[in-house]
Each structure stands twice: as structure tokens, then as C-alpha cells.
Length: 134
Image (cartoon, rainbow, N blue to C red; front, side, top):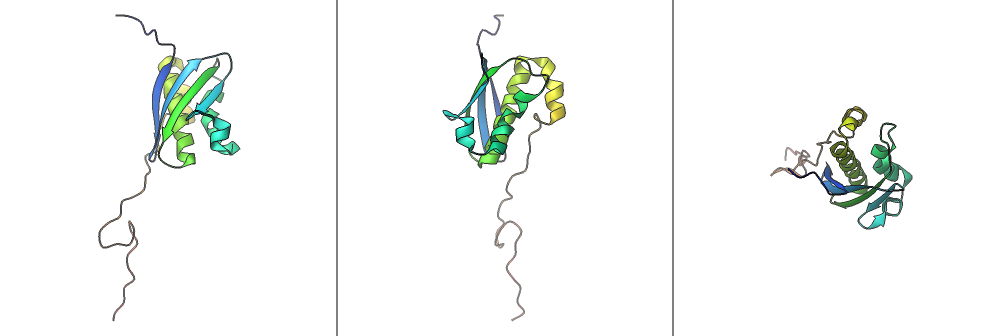
């Protein structure tokens, strides 16, 4: 059986309705590209930008990586968390010893919360029309 000769690792991360396809490649300098833009330019705020780098900033992660992510759906916060999960999954694929610290940090757990569907006869998912006696 031939060895894996691809120079990159691919993984998928999801959060709410956002899904991210992440590709990590060993590189000289760490950089994150989201939908063809730099992560700082795409997310604009430091909080969302730092969420994407969380998995790469653990002490156990050694080396530098070039991260390319294609993300769609959801809001910017969900997209940032989906990218973080995709990076964490790709790191565990490339190196098995990283699974334990990434799991302890909570980066491999998918947050399953999503918007509840609207039910018939109701105004929203649970909001009812106001009742009047007459």
C-alpha cells in the first residue's frame, strides 16, 4: 500500500450552519487564509481572528503551518469556530499525539446547537399568538 504522499492534510469543521474545509500544509511561517483573504482581513475583530488561531497556539503544537480554509454558511462567529475545529481535526490527522491536548481544550467537540424550526400555528418556534377571550 503506498504511503500518503500529499503534502497537506484536509479536514472539515462545522458549527451551527457554518462549514469549513480546511487544508494545512507545513510552511516556514504560520498563516491563515480564509476564502482567499487573510484571516485578519476576513474577520475584522481580534476575538474572531484569535478563535481561528486557538488550535495552532497550543504548547503541544510544534511547527508552523499554512492554513487555507473555504468557509460558507452561518455568521462570522460560527465560521471562526468551524475553522478552529477544522484546523484541530487536520492536526490530529497529521499527528496522533495532538489528539489528547486538542480534545482537552474542547476544539474537537462539535457544538450541535442550531436554530429550532418554526411550528405550524405558532409565530416562531415556540412563541404563540396572544390569547384573547373575546
